[in-house]
View 1 (cartoon, helix red, strand yellow):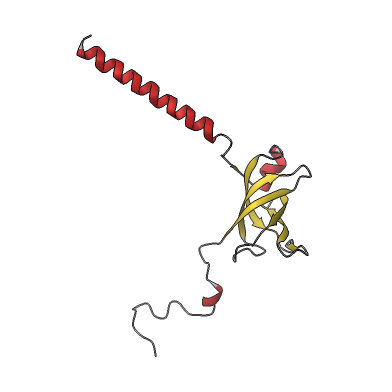
View 2 (spheres, one colour):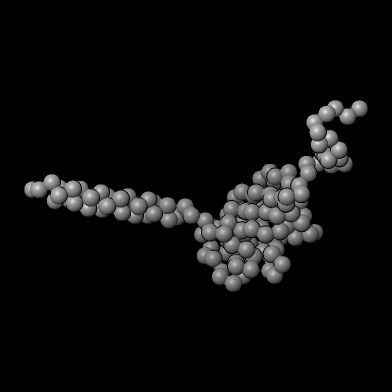
Length: 147
């Protein structure tokens, strides 16, 4: 076999191996992918019960309710158009408050409630930790000690 044919054969084998590895990876990860939905998307598309999805939106004002067990929280997430009931059991993030952004990983139940496995609280670019509220952060722009 000529050297040109050997190189072509190796190139074809490498391409087949690369495509095969990609297909194996996609097949292995197909159940691990969670798609991002807003409450409007859930109302419109009705994701399958038990399918792993990610829900994002704003925590509705006045909707946070803590259960008697101390770890279960019920709340609603809205996107300005629709609202979705969510239940989460666990410790909520410090930034989780009414009117803040939230991203929850979980699944839809047969009752139409989103059962969250984890919560990520989001904040805007103007976020200031509670400990630093009321401190003027602009008065010492030069780095010198103010007395």
